Length: 97
Length: 97
DNA sequence: ATAATATATCGTCATTTGTCGATATGTCAA
DNA sequence: TTGACATATCGACAAATGACGATATATTAT
Image (cartoon, rainbow over all chains, first blue to last red; front, side, top):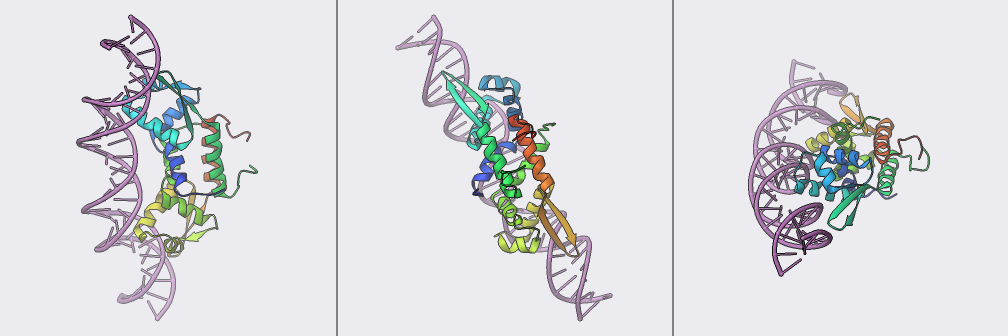
């Protein structure tokens, strides 16, 4: 496991903002359209778009374009990667525990 | 598992700065004195102190005062907590995987 | 083709963050 | 008690970040 000190911040930045955590919690309920997320948050449309870009860059969220709508969902793969970073740092390396 | 959108950013902010990730990597080798960390990083003493505060606030690192020295080490407990946040969000809840 | 709608991008601004040097605090040795 | 040293705190400043409204792009319906 390579622990790239440039890349790791990109992944975990997703979790460093209150609104982004709210978005992740909303996505726990399954894939959601951007317009649905917008309804649920007190931010403007451009701000939501900004946060979704950061979330997708982190790998924790993936977007799917469907006509004029964007659907977002959690990426199990992205979360596995994030967990393995934590395990690698804390010395448990993801094999056990 | 309560997913507090105020608290979660505090935990993961630790991992959102390149120098802090470097510090965590240094601590993978075991407990280290602040002065040792200072030698290994290209930042001033006050900056290191600032980062150590953020790392300790996150719970991923614990400090131990020994006379005039501060020794820092990774907190397995803190990492377990962080992993369980990720698992809770991604819907695996820490029981399995 | 035109209009309507969903999302992304741009420019701006206020706040936060990372950095520094200077200073304060706390601890040990002489 | 004084001086030396390790660390923390303070004040300042530049850069990054989150927010907004305005505009651009893309897609669908008329």
